[in-house]
Length: 638
Ligand code: ADP
Ligand code: MG
Image (cartoon, rainbow, N blue to C red; front, top):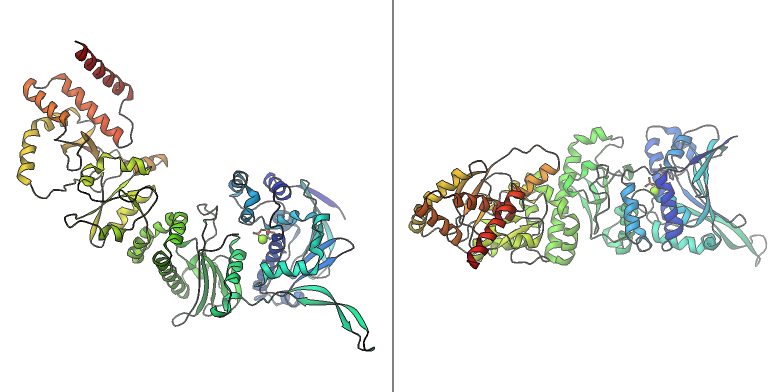
């Protein structure tokens, strides 16, 4: 039999290095990871056995067994699950299959991983955690359903390579043999193992058995004790979601969450319920407190696990939750679906639709309840997942209102670190205020100093400050809240004083000539020039037409390489600003003086700067400003 050597992929080498040299705490999780792999392997075998009876015949009752060999110093974790072929072994135990790995490793370096063992497992690196306690690992596996005893062995000492060899194995399934490090020999101790298994793997559905030594009374000779070795089941194994809510301890819920989510922290909320009526199912769902690293990657696995009558059909069923609730983890166990459902069948299944609707409602209600009763916790949740939740405004018309109620915003009145809601905003609106105002910006400071807020602020109206790139788009989709229009302060005409129409007409008349002149001068750059209802201190600003593209959005789209149609915007001028008063005077006295053209250009460039854009021609702009400064200085010294 020949031994073949393989190099680990670079990222595996790096990972192993971290495992061995940097992680000192929580080493006991290796057992959880290996048991979890065995349990997954049995899930798969059981699923296949639904259609291929020879699989169960060969395997016997499903179980995971833990054996200890004190002489050899080895701990062996065995299962009679699906097993691996030679190729599967090379693939599964030689690479890290997930594309987010590089980012994961980077995160591991940046954060202090000694304090963050929860990162292990998030990217499916579970198996390699064996090397935290073993200096050599041997895996022997025989594929489920095979008739002869041909098997494959994989061995590595985490030294950059692994060896593959053909071998023999009497039973189907997988044995993982850990050659324990000297200082980790405590994992040969029955009580140590028992504690770790109870702590992390009690809910595993299949029996986890261990050979234990006990003293028993000799049946032949009364009073004489005999040492016997017997197999004992360690875990209680009752599927946690099938138990009554009142019988499940908080800690058990938490451990189960960690098992299915690979998250080391506690969930923010646990939702456990039984649905009856049009659809019968049990759901045990979790809202995590921390966003997993891969949440925005394409291959992020969405959805709770799907079970049909206690049999796992798939570990992530994306048809069960809308994408905007993709952070929800858990288990759904249905009594209505057939055991042989495939992904294709799930796609247009009425039962699945009903379950999805039901879960969506439950999660949204839970979030609303959390926001009401446990606000601080909700804010933490929101900081992690608000960005995802918002997508629901776009994707789920039927839930728009409810989702809108879950969103949190900073505003001109909250300061940068606290939030308000649309409801609170509306409740605080003065009688005269008709619309809800918002501004999008890159930072809170930029927004709160913005000239676009001047008049609104003077009225003491609140302005929502939105810092997420997609916010403007989301607001456009939401359109209104409780009958109040949502209006971006950079868009459309803003007219806060409904009275004083005659006064406004008068001012308009006075500025008509100047406006016409500026329109002509700036005709290549702006669509229109008009008097502003939103400015108080600044001389001018640029606004977008109602329904037009917000400049931040425009930049975002451009950055994404999208073709954005060139749209001219509107220059608004502040009639009460001395500069415009002066310009009006010059025009009246001197007619079309060259200085007016210069001023018009300068105003336009200022407006560009104020909205966060670059001047049209930075060099020309700087020259013009310098010239003004020189003129001013010469006047002063003359
Ligand atoms: P994950 O479990 O997240 O996929 P692991 O590193 O724990 O990541 O395991 C890697 C892969 O190795 C598994 O996906 C599976 O294909 C294979 N594997 C590990 N242990 C077993 C086992 N006991 N039986 C069958 N396959 C296994
Ligand atoms: Mg695993």
